[in-house]
Image 1: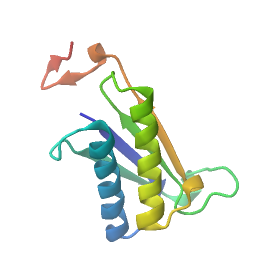
Image 2: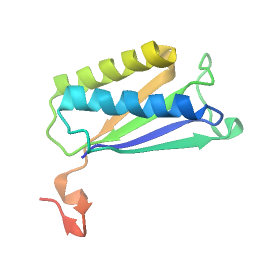
Image 3: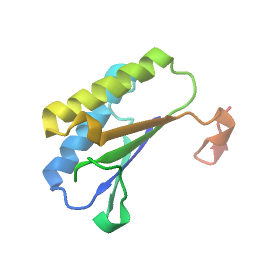
Image 4: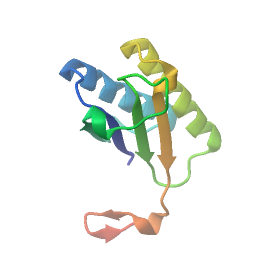
Length: 119
């Protein structure tokens, strides 16, 4: 059950946001083997004056945080990062340097699903 949070500067079109969500979901399915229904993603748009980045970043800069159950291999995570970045470059013409991906893997006891702690 990947949980995805994408933070980016406000002002992108609905089509851009839809394609972004599709790129993320398709990359997760292809590299981690999740199913199509397993889609929990949020886009958080931030006013430009409230979003600081390093010099050289553009209005397309984004931080993509992916929270996963533990257990994926380093190679799977590497492939996810590479595939997602290349998908965004190809389909949205975003510079690879504008894509910042962080993968979180909280321990199972830190997950609650339907009021039940995961073990």
